[in-house]
Length: 86
Image (cartoon, rainbow, N blue to C red; front, side, top):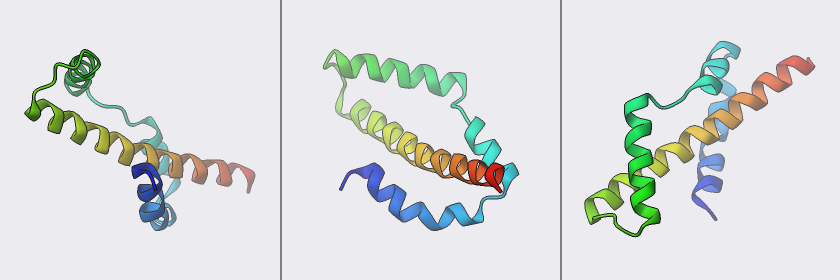
């Protein structure tokens, strides 16, 4: 089971707590410029095989956070889509 599958399964009940407004805000969520810049730097170093151990941990933490937010955004989109159909 992948990290994303585990998160999806674990966070499934959270979807029922999202109001339409919270769901819209989650869908619009993006990392701030400083965070995105650091993530881009780490991603480039990762592609070049030049991450230090500390940077590898930092990059892995970013990836975990992105996976978490992606799953929540998916649930938020589903909620908004189901509201439109109702």
